[in-house]
Length: 244
Image 1 (cartoon, helix red, strand yellow):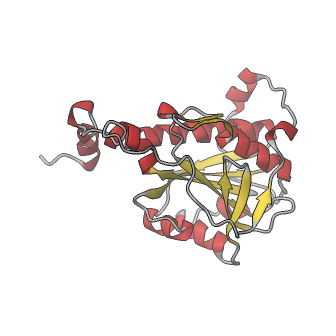
Image 2 (cartoon, helix red, strand yellow; image 1 turned 135 degrees about the vertical axis):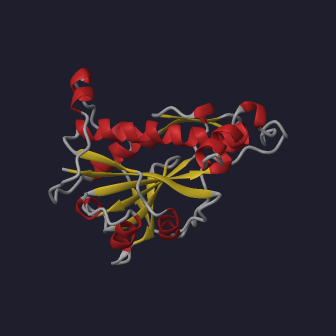
């Protein structure tokens, strides 16, 4: 009986089947952030130290965590968006020879994700697709066409909650950032890391009295194309809607 793709993947990424990683071969460490054009429109976000502290009952927060798929047309403030980005991918420290320390765990501090946000209702920001630059804590404009929300919704298999959300987070994985240290086993860690990030989004949204819903169902080729990534070196891995 032929083994499934999943079984083959798990066996191929056991330690005994791995080739030497880029790090073991002495290859340079990939950059912490993908390059971007400096002439694109930037949206400055409130700095992390300007964000209001949230006092929470932790046990209650954990117990009330749930997926919310129906939203009102409520506008997120710029502070709310900054808070959610900081809680999910905020960079606390960048160590040139090692990696970045962020507000979520990551295998080997590799933090291989780039964050995109589809904005529908955020105070002071035109609707459209943006990329979060975690090192600078700013957004850059990617696509503000009138059809971008519909294109992304279609790529997510027409899940209508994307259109009604205030903002939808989309994380892409930059594979080399992880495989440089762990070889092909790093693909396992990318998916584990995605779970860490999304759980922070759930909890952070709850402290703002907003709901969240993770989304893993999407047409990979279509979503990668809409985001403008190649689908191999960089590919969509997870998403989450946020709304009141």
